[in-house]
Image (spheres, rainbow, N blue to C red):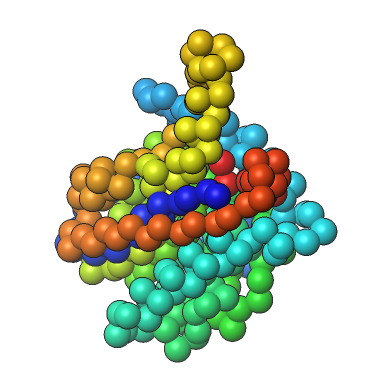
Length: 266
């Protein structure tokens, strides 16, 4: 059994943010972006994740024979985010999906709600193998911490099970806030602090018994109680943060580990 606490946040950008930056606007069917020269997600901060390795992992997973076999959780959370988009009674001319993967949110949306969608992911293979959607879509290979778009570009930004992998979450939230238009909406979901609690406890107890101490074997997660503060610091207002608990049962530890590897979640 593996439990997962998925935090879903809805935030509104009200008014204009701070100073503008010289980021280039996207045009064409696809594009690739890298961090600005001299910049790094780890600048002045601890970097627990190797983003280049994560890109390789996601590219590898997207090329597996049956990538959809392990995507049930992403599709479920993507569906829940789409439901929250439908709760807003307005049409969004231009939307952005940050860390879109194979399009787990887009497949649940329609062109009556989203007129055009930009899908951004660090892994090009995931974008190439995206699930079909009725919404006109543009794919962009870019890092979630360095969004290659001008300020005040999007009416809606969504993100599903991707932001827990960034090294600088406050920066990622600021980037999202910056590319949103005034009164734009951000709806996102990420794994919360209690995710894989059973696995972490089992590994710690086993290592304590054998080694007399333990080291972390599961990626760190942001506490749900901290998300509202981080979003507020990024400039968002009218915040709503929910927690959904999703429980998946496995016959044993090895089946769980195999599933996690195929998902490239952790």
